[in-house]
Amino acid sequence: MKIFGAEQERTLGSLYGAEAAEVYSALLRSLSVVLEEEVAPLSLALDEGKEGISRPRRVLFDQGLCKLPHPAEFGGMDIPFGVYALAMELAGAADASTAMSLGIHNTVADAVSRFGSPEQKKRFLPALLSGKKLAAFALTEPTSGSDARAMHTTAAREGRHYVIEGSKMFITNAGEADLYLVFAATGDGHGAFLVEGTNPGLKVGKPLKEKLGMRASHTAEVRLAKCKVPEDSLLGKEGAGFEQAKQLLDSSRIVMGMICVGIARVAYAEALAYAKGRDLFGKKLSDMQLTREKVANAAMETNASRLLCMHAARLKESGKPYSSEAAQGKVLATESAARTCDAAIQLLGGYGYTSADVHRHWRDARLLTIGEGASEVLRLLIASQELEKEP
Ligand SMILES: Cc1cc2nc3c(=O)[nH]c(=O)nc-3n(C[C@H](O)[C@H](O)[C@H](O)COP(=O)(O)OP(=O)(O)OC[C@H]3O[C@@H](n4cnc5c(N)ncnc54)[C@H](O)[C@@H]3O)c2cc1C
Image (cartoon, rainbow, N blue to C red):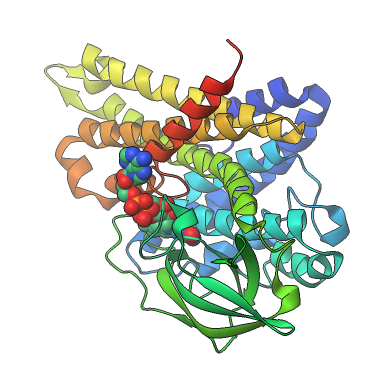
């Protein structure tokens, strides 16, 4: 499968106009060559634990994937967010775990870029964008996920420091990260703190090994005990942390949706190739009407997911509200990717069930109907925003 194909090129053309689309297409085409040659061939070994994630992640840092949407002043490339989102579709098609690890890392870079002081930007952004430093986003706790506001982690001011106490659960990049964006209650609300991985008050638990999918990404608990950080570790204002988290997740949901578009495309392409070659009842599997229904559904849902996520990205680029559209894109893309991957397993029959090369796509996609806002929570968010709109 071509990771950057006609569909992606047409999407760029329709959203950005012919001239800009040509520039962005050239950029994504050269990224896709590296994805095809250096990342996709590793993905099965990554799933099976025979290859570590740091190698493909390094390749993508070197390709500038994390620089795309950030300001040139700090080493970024000032490329529109939608083009970055499309690049994440390509990364998701090559290897979903690597794409997710980088997507979450980039949410922390986005946090520093949006809410950081000039000193914090100078200090952290160049290293985050080039991949010299890896970041983790630490919001979820053992007793609060969807209800993130109910967090128990606290940050208490002591002179010119804060002392953070608590525990964060299911943290991607934990143990590998050099920087953790930790959300904590500060008394009058919440704060977001940039905590160095070397802080003696931050300890990472054992990696969670029983994960269904996204197996190459590291996931672990992060414990904060008497974790003392200087007052300038606070991102933006005290009390603003929860609002910051909501804004960061709105963006990140577009990215996670696009990763799922990439996953669905690979599963669909593999199933299609199999169906065209499999003989049964004197015909090819791809000639059966019931197969064609699966093919049509996969094409419709994958294309609709990309368009809805890209619509949210364009709203974000133009400074318009996009929270509901980002949630819609994420729910559609993640749920339809799980359906498409499930259909791919079904089409391959026994081979689909017994080959990790096929079922890992479903296992990877399955996480993203839960993480970064579970589908149930996002449907409630979408509904409440829709009900507020003028009829
Ligand atoms: C592999 C992995 C990586 C992750 N990486 C990160 C990370 O890097 N950083 C981070 O902070 N977190 C991370 N998470 C956590 C993830 O975001 C949470 O798992 C998710 O937000 C759901 O929270 P929960 O698991 O506590 O489930 P809960 O919030 O307890 O939800 C349980 C179920 O209840 C449903 N539910 C919730 N509200 C309602 C409602 N109102 N009505 C009906 N049903 C409802 C949910 O949809 C879900 O199905 C990760 C999780 C995993 C598994």
